[in-house]
Length: 613
Image (cartoon, rainbow, N blue to C red):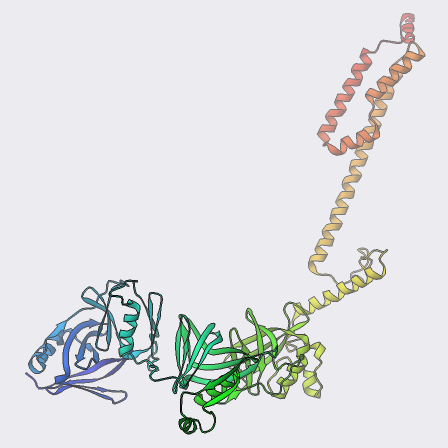
């Protein structure tokens, strides 16, 4: 049996990333040297307690467990190397190298086992996945749920950041299974522990982001937010900036803490911690340290006993512990005298604060933009009304922020501020650049002057025309409002109209022309029909003879009333029916007239003439 075994191109799994290197097995132990960093891991033979051989993504792997609970994983072995390794382990380490495959059923329920510094999720006797508890940075509990968060790995392209476990609500010996799970994790995890007493505690502070009321416990190295649902431990090393901003109502104050990396609540990431204070709320604060310790640690920045406004105490303590200055608004003053501007960002209304070195918007979502990352700014026309405007900021990375619904009166103050900070203004007029003229605050709506907007120009022209028409109609209320449009005139004298207006006017003229032709043809046909009726009736009446004046007058009047229709009746009847119906009626009326004439008895004159013949 060989005294040593060496394997090249072996990968060691460390915090989710695979580091290639060289593995050497000897009688004294196992040594792995990282090819990239040169770091050497040395495992003594007497420390080994278990060796497992299993199939992994990169071929086959070797998992080693030690007496102190450490787990080492090495991948990249070939299947044929199992026998050689197994014999070496039996001979020199007196260990049985066991074969144990991972479960690949795809189930998401099973049993969690804690062994040393390893959490194993098993289905039956086969493990599904394993989590080194040293990688856990945070462990939070909810209703029947435990959430594990992990340290970021800068070397890995993709990192696992969070895992959630659902724990069924079972009670065994009065022990809450959720709390028992969390305690097993915290006992081995690399989590910030709240050891010792807090320096001071601020209770029931109103937090806008994340929303709720939290107790803030101040420890020497981290900040602990304790709420009804979530707990956050924020190391002071993750605090980038501190802001103290007065509210526009002059009765409240915002205290903003910028964080990197952000705190997490489910899938939501919070890069800013925003607290809201009332200026009228005071507090007396006593630090949980003796005066000598306070003086030695904070060098006069804090004292053991302090009193004042609540927002002043919180900001003062945070400044001393984080060791960063607090940013406040500069000399900017808006139209209303406040140091901020009311506006909307995305779907929420908030406040935009022009600072000495950037802009910050609170509170939903909070945005901080430094001057050195701004490419240009733009003053744009308001989308809903001319009484407001939009302020656009585009960064050098191409990200655009649009703060909308800003009151028009704020334009002059904001323009002067941006101009004084020497920021690039995209829609500054060329004439103003050349001649150094003061900005015309009433013409800010003509944004993007370097690009011609045909649609905008057409809308402006139409608005002027509508205003002129409205003024003409108000001055000459008794006259027609469309006097400027004369179809008989040349196109040069006609006012410019849109394409659809012209089409509508042409359609209207064609319709009127068709109606005139239709009504004219219908009138001539009705006249011809009337003249035919009159001629027929006259001929037939002349053939009649009455025996007496009284009887003849009665019979003629009756016949005329039955055979003739009034002008009103004829016109209404013809207008309401088609040509076929009118022809049928005329035939029926002629037939009825002939029948009546045939049934009328001959007069005395006719009988006399007949007898003469």
